[in-house]
Image (cartoon, rainbow over all chains, first blue to last red; front, side, top):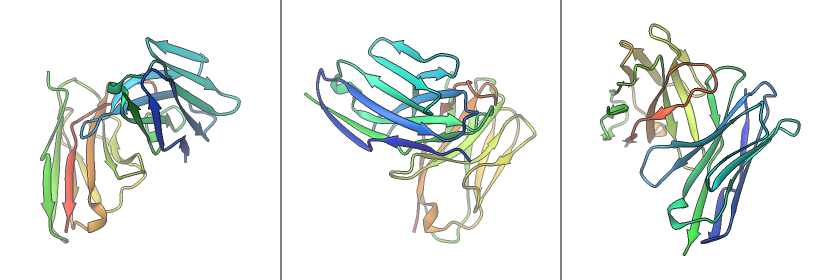
Length: 112
Length: 114
């Protein structure tokens, strides 16, 4: 099945700095790559996603890049703020379905 | 519009007891899912229902059963709870099963098996 590896598992950054989280996947047929943010004690919520026909997508301070050849995709958060502190999960579907396989998560701490 | 609602929010079970987690969505979504979340292991798919009337196993189905009661409701049953089933359980739904459809999660159910 699909394997999704996510690094790093924890990330501490100073407020205002950038944060980058990287995920690799194994199924070359995967075509949709969402990122979810989960605040402490809350549900995961989609923050951005990218499809395999584009290489980059931006939404204000967050961006996702995709390298299909290398089978990896990354989340970039610029100008980090304390409210960005959360656990972030990447995911990839097995082939065309919506059976998402999630990475192990990255705990991001933004220090004021 | 409540989205995905699941109950109970917290439950403590003794080993061997059974229980059912209830889930309902009011977004007219076709697909529903049950995930479990353990520390450091992300979210793992237990069972899913791509459309009303169908259910299929996910990554970790052992020890669980599901019922897609109707389009709105998808329940998860633990027949004989084990300590290894201590976890946070999330119900989720999406408009369709095809990749690219946003998955919306419920608030989670914290289950402890002692």
